[in-house]
Amino acid sequence: MFDKVSRLSEVLSACCHSRSAHFLDIQKGLFTRPVKIGLRATGWPQSELAILNAARIAVKSEEEIRALVAQLEHSRKNSLGGVQ
Image 1 (cartoon, rainbow, N blue to C red):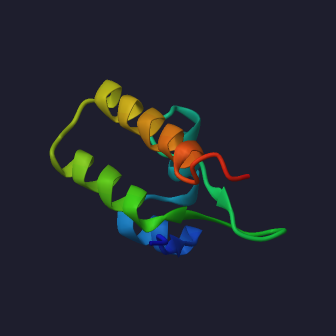
Image 2 (cartoon, helix red, strand yellow):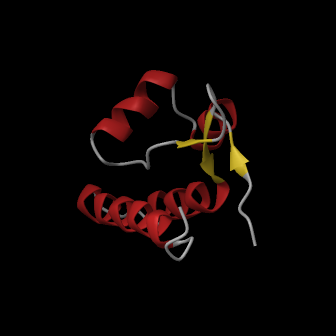
């Protein structure tokens, strides 16, 4: 099953962040990096967005969120079972 990909505007709306705050969170390891969906297009899997929002609602610490982000990005690499 494939995950729907949200573009930046949807992510910013769902997270109630400004563009600069969102990219600062990515830099700090508090949000996953975008995935390429075209030559000049990126987005974020909606499942990751839901997981990260749930962690923030549950008042997880920054360290817990960083660990979650690392886990999500690691699972992206393994989700295709070695297909590249």
